[in-house]
Amino acid sequence: MFGEVSLKDPYEILGVAKTATADEIRSAYRKLAKKLHPDLNPGDKSAEDKFKDVTGAHDLLSDAEKRRRFDAGEIDASGAERPQQRYYKDYANAGGAGGGPRYQNASGFADFAQEDDFLAELLRRREQQARRAPGADRLYQLEVDFLDAVNGATKRITLPDGTSLDVAIPSGIQDGQTIRLRGKGAPSRGEGPPGDALVEISIRPHKFFTREGDDILLELPVTISEAILGGKVKAPTPTGAVMVTVPKGSSTGSTLRLKGKGVARRDGSHGDELIKLKVMTPPAPDAGLEAFLSNWTPNYDPRRDMQS
Amino acid sequence: MIISKTEFLYRAQTDQETLQLWISEEWIAPQGQDAEPEFSEADLARASLIRNLQQDMGVNTEGVGVILNLLDQIHSLRWALSERLRLKDDGAA
Image (tube, rainbow over all chains, first blue to last red):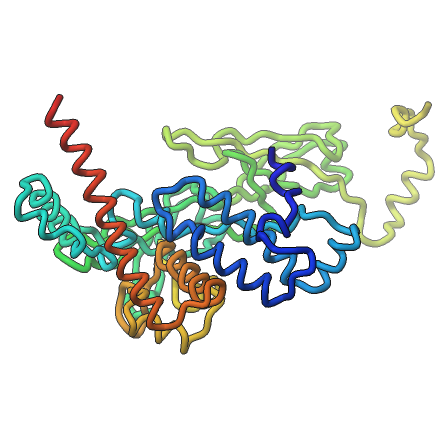
């Protein structure tokens, strides 16, 4: 059905001849637009589809180059549709708010309200609603440090009007999460409560920590001897450095788990910190190591799995 | 959600001067202070309608005002009608 709609003949849709001039096309379009525009037909659901066909046909035929290519059979009528437009009627009818109290206009029926208790009651309630309508919500963006997001913090936003807003960042907040501060939005125009402030949080990356759900990931460089012989090394965690034991015979990719050193969960428990070891050779040639290794024959093949 | 004036001008594809005219004619009625008006999605949709009326249908400035006024009445009437029908149903039940 979709294809069928888009392939209708644009000349037929506008009701003009193939030889129509640009002026004739424009005037045919105007005539149809006045009749079919969805906002001028708020109760007619089919107007929107018809209007879409008409604007598509007009967009194609009002562009001389597109029209030439269409006439030459180089393109068809598809792809000529405008992006979906939101019509005012979709907002005006939402919840009876009339697209905002300022656009309401009861002069079309106020006289009936004098004779009809229902209508009188409606008008009274509507006025009351408009008066008690809360203020609008305001959206803010706040960038926080990785560790503040993990451990929690209080941040201050300075608003355009010079006042400021303290935002409590709960520990464990995630990137893209929104904090709602009740009553910190725009004031009501009438007697209603103010709206809310919505603070969207984005988290700056950390130099060496990354986060996967509730777990903190860390790549920890170790020396060859720490990997081979094992030992205690200092490792950072979000709450400060701790000593961890590197087991004897570790390799690059070996993972240590620090229970409870990850991100706080809602239920009060914590995720883990996962430390992935990375064996580092000396940054500069090391004569002692070279002398030692020249007498050593590895009895393992790290590329065994790659051989076919 | 609130739309700032800069975003409104961009999304409505219009300029400061035109917007000023729309506001002074009361075709668009933003909230907030005059220095920092706050627009809504409904205001944006109204701006598209105004553009459609002027550019696609050739309605002049006077005509736009008349049409918007009547449209606002129609929407209020439609609301009253739907509420009236709903209340009647409730009353019958």
